[in-house]
Image 1 (tube, rainbow over the protein chains, first blue to last red):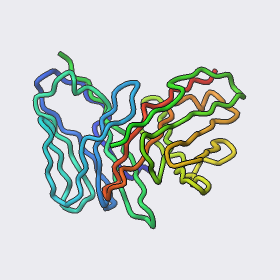
Image 2 (image 1 turned 180 degrees about the vertical axis):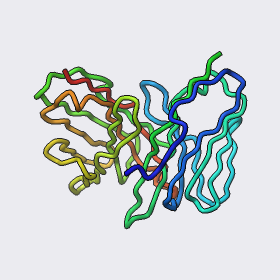
Image 3 (image 1 turned 60 degrees about the vertical axis):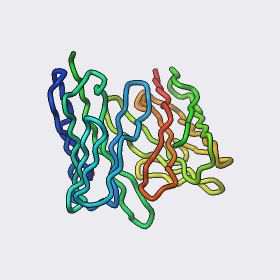
Length: 112
Length: 115
């Protein structure tokens, strides 16, 4: 069962366009992470959101955690070719020990 | 953060053989994790490796197929046993950040191809 639904699965856009990636669940998470993975490398942590309604900005990237802590979004403004990669959301739940669940990922390709 | 290295970075193996993947961390960590990432897909947790005790395996993964060692707080190995083409995948180790937010740091991965 995929507890974290991530959309879209694939996105190909022109440089300069904006985009939003969504991560949704019916479960409540104690925290949620966003990672970016480039070919041949492991995922690299971008941000962690913890508080419902929290918004964090990392240059052109804006991350939001839903009020109920069940969903999150990643918005990229004026995408650049360097943003190309696989974006993964990951939610942590305390089920007697913390377990992290990864979304299916969004593969982004930004064309110059 | 933690710096994590994995060896080998990639390998091509014959079916029926076994491959051991090493994961080295530059600092002592309590928990190390092994993930599988099949082509074009997300990460699936194989097991959690704890120092001084047996690894904890996720549903669908068993010790006979994926034996894990954790001899100290900076090192772990994952063996992929009796390989078949279905085992072709990227295998990643990760460690937790020791913080409260369950952040993980990942190694670069081992790309395994089974012929």
